[in-house]
Each structure stands twice: as structure tokens, then as C-alpha cells.
Image 1 (cartoon, rainbow, N blue to C red):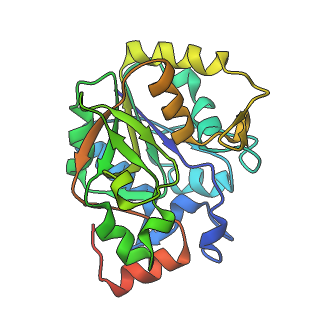
Image 2: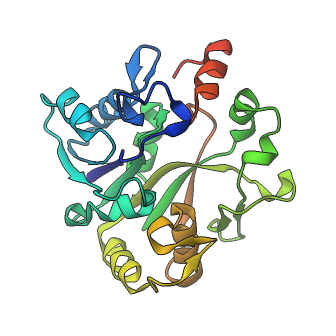
Length: 251
């Protein structure tokens, strides 16, 4: 099993911390986010790690120079989105893969749970999401996205704007696992998409990951939730860091 970490982004909402380093090197509890992710991978026995870099990649590469890690570069990191970064690492998609965003910190048990899941395509979903969002902001509903599960236990909707809390059965946290055989179908599906179309208001290069997952659900295969109850954080802004500090959050 391989791990692909998506770390190309600049993280403008984390300025000034990201003026001299990529987003994934911002520190939480005195440790860069990327160090926490790599440490978890190693502890779970996941040693084949590729990081997709972009913004200030030389800083990240130097930081990890003593690690046995592969790098792929998203040369268009400032004009593309997370999904485009993922496919910069297409050459590494030759086995079961775990995909991790690089602005999240999560407990080792969460990664173990995902690694052991047997589904063809699975994503980690926090059913206690509101607890975290209430620390981060005054109105969780304004920021959260829909997540709906059908009678078969599969996700049938995610990433939309919710009308009420009833539309949210959890939040996608930015951790995905895809089995090798399913991955072949997904790669082919991605390359066959209309490059000129607009996807949830975005062009092909800026398609959201959740938009792509929704398209897979609608047209290709089921996507299974792997449910957790907290044990992770997203670091997207200076406000996040300040609010976590006030709440004395530890992961």
C-alpha cells in the first residue's frame, strides 16, 4: 500500500506563517503538520510515501532530506486544485493507495482504521464533526458541506451546500483509500472527463476533490464511509490555530 500526500498549496489564509514555508510545514503544538502525518504513516507500517509539492517545495524537501520519501511536483500549483495535484502523482498509482491532505492532523488509529478497510473506495467521515467546527467558528452550518448515506451504507451525496444540519451525517476529513483494481477504473474515468466542462462552478483543473468523488458515486462505483468520532483537526487558517490554542486541543 502506498501513501500520497497532497502538499502543493500555498495556504494564503495561514499567512504570515506561510510566507516562508509551505502550508504543511506550519507548526501545531511545536511540530510541523507534515511531520505528524509521516510519523503516523511509519507507525502504521506505511513506508512507500510520495508527497506532491508545489509552493516553496525546496523548503519541504530540505526539511525531509533524511527521509526516504518520493516527491512529485505540481508545476501549476497556483492555478490548479487538489485533484490536479493528486494526478501529478499518477505514476505512483500502481497499488492500493491512501491519499491524505497535508493540512490535517489525525490520530494514528484513524489511519489504521482506513488502512484496514476492505472497500474499493472509502473515505474517512467524522460523525462528531460539529464539535470541531464549533471550536473553529460561530456558525458551523455556514462552512460545513453535505454528507448523506443511503440504505446500503454508501455515501450518495457530499460536498454540497447544506440547507440544515439534517443534510450533514458527518464531514469528509481529507483521507481516502482506493484499492488497486478500482484505481485503474478511476484513472481512466478521470482522463475521459470533458476537459472543457465546468464542474460545480470550477474548470477541470480546479475541480474540487469532493466534486470528483461525487461524480464517481454517480457514474462509476460506490464510495464507503469509514466513520470516526473526532480525533483530528484541520488547519486552514490563523483563526484555526488561535482557536485550537484557546481550546487547548491536543491530537
